[in-house]
Length: 160
Image (cartoon, rainbow, N blue to C red; front, side):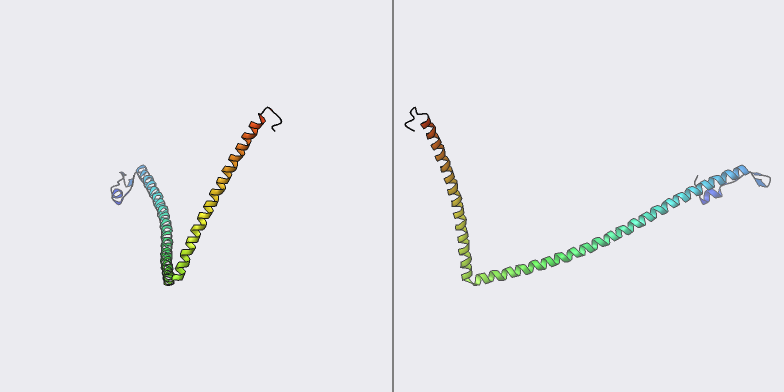
């Protein structure tokens, strides 16, 4: 039984003369003691939970602060990267303008590209010729073996 102020005011004991009955008073005190003990346990449990929640709150606040710092650092890095990207684009534009301004350099670049393409084509042709040579060599070997087999089947040794 949970005891509240109102429930305690409603408690009454039978009297025997000017004394209360000891059994009733003892039973009431036992119930009251049990109720107080349950309340103390509940209060103790709530305090533990409160302490745990405070620790969790503190941990979460620290985590939040760490995440805010990380967020600020990442924003700073992003801004620095954007600034670096902009600087690189500016440099690239300056180089492109220089190249456009010097026709000799552009001509050399085109000649180099043409030479690289021609080199790649020559390498491709060499590979094709090697493959063709290997195919022809194998065909000649097969023909020579076939001729040798035919010669071996001839009846006369003089022909050999």
